[in-house]
Length: 162
Image (cartoon, rainbow, N blue to C red; front, side):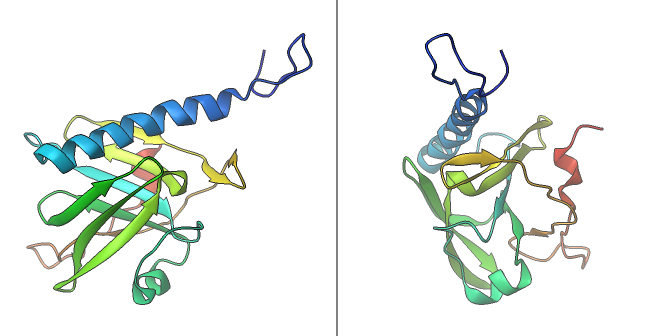
């Protein structure tokens, strides 16, 4: 039986939604643990999300720089990470100024912990249904410029299997 196929009683099982819920639960649990205990060892997280998703709250200048997708990094400098059932919020430094972002879990399109090469790619939830999205060419906004003068910009292609 494929996702959404009718069952013998006339109903349908939405396997895509069940799997997404389970995987988002992994991310939610990791973020909740990080909020309580901080990051463990070399772990750090890249979280890619749709900036157009309802409920995403971020400064206008960041939305203008990232009109579709944005990736944030929780590594060395983040503050006030709070996790609720449907969303998380965090303060990050952009150009030396702390800014609060509020991100519903339904807006997530990717998660990566490069310290252990663990990655998840999600379908964004729109109107209660998981929908495939092509995420190409999106840029990463990191907390501070890199020590080498670079801008810590990465493509989301790292979330795709080669």
